Amino acid sequence: MVKKFLILLVVTLIFITAIVYTPLATVLSRFVTRSGHSVTSVDSSSPIMTVVPTIPADPTSTPTTGQMGQTAICFAPADILPFAFMPDSFSILVRAKMGMQIFNLDTQKEASFPQAPKNIITAALSHDGQILAWALDDNTIQLLHISDQKVFHTLSGHTDMVTKLRFSPGGDFLVSASHDNWVRVWNLDGEELDSFQAGALGIGISPNGSMLATVPSDGPVTLWNLATGEKIKELGGSGGYDTSDAEFSPDGQYLAADLVTGIYMWRISDGNLVWNEVKNSMAVTFSPDGRYLAFSDVDDSNKVILAAADTAQFTRVIDKMQSPVWELFFSPDASLLAATDGVEIRIWQVEDGTLLSVGKATCP
Image (tube, rainbow, N blue to C red; front, side, top):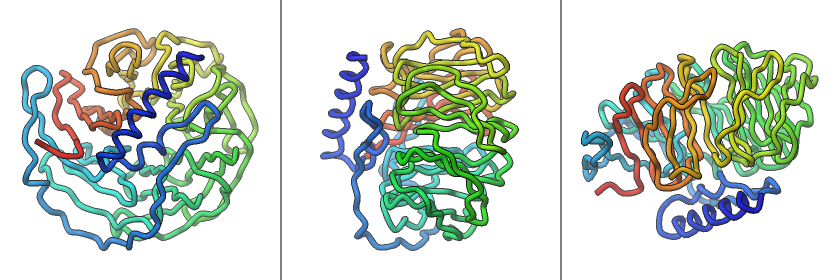
């Protein structure tokens, strides 16, 4: 445990230094001490930005050398905080300190979203790509239509920082987790459907929308019945970070979570632990086609690794990052994998590991 604390402290100090010299002001909001409290940078004085039409990417962007000698395109987002692909699988959504951007990875064009009225803590995109949810530093959540980029509901109820947002697979409800120890379930009309105390930092929703998995700041990963709010079972583990996620496999048979004590994968049917070989990681996810479990190993040079989804047995190394990876996700068609370590964004082709794009604060 001392080792984990020292690693987290070093990573945090590195990012604090980076913030002084780069526009990564929100990186601290993604890291948390063992007690479950993170530090955020607040700036509510910035004006609302009007929608900017799609424009060419930064003309200073130049190719960079990727894996296998190929050329990767460099793009310069406002911040290094990607969190979702659009349904087309070639556009990526990146949140900045007080706004959003969509980058088209094929055309290398970008479109700017209107800025939020306050600092954005976390965000989520509905599975159909139609609705965006973001949580603000005043503990409210706003829902926006992607089509017109306008807020249509503001959700109030949490009394502390919202750490995670997750849309149901069917897109009919949103689940939020907060440092106030409450999980809240909302419909898209802005109404709170249910709430229960789960002490959750990370959350995940099963493919059929019936179960919720929660990662607490201290204690075991737990499964809940979303229809009743009742606890189903405790799976195990011993707490997580603000960056922790609970990820169901596409077939609903397994659950993976990145915790303080490493990555765990359980079989849902009997709650048995299937795998816990990586002891230091802040990123894990299943591919949408059910083939792979992707994760990063901090103790092994921050390598990004693909493993078999049902056994977590090693398949191949995709790449290694400069710092610990704390966001990792596939495109909806499972052809691309994106990661960020707070220094840069990398996007690879899953089939052969080709590095296609690199997002940096400044391109060469």
